[in-house]
Image (cartoon, rainbow, N blue to C red; front, side, top):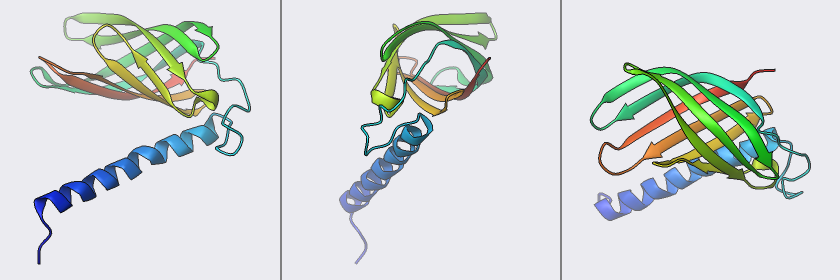
Length: 149
């Protein structure tokens, strides 16, 4: 007997949850912590200028790719403020953002006036991010950033 639509949906949710948890586990090791020690064995700094390339898709505007830069000038404990800058056909754009993370940066999140960010610190100078906006003109963007030293 073939699986029902409900069973297939439940299976997809389980697979998606497993895939989402895999990067979190890998990210904790890259940030210098482990699950056993609570992930907080060393200080995580987000300060600096991070640059890379982004790929975006939007409901109305479609695909757009290009350079992106995150500049973090303020960090207090496990919270930070920054500015994300990117290029568009109409010229450069920027948004202020705030972010926070758990000990060892095992889980990282952020927000600006319109959407939310998820971050994964792969090593002390490599940061993956995704950004989503919902509602009219919904969109999502992901990219990899490298910190300038």
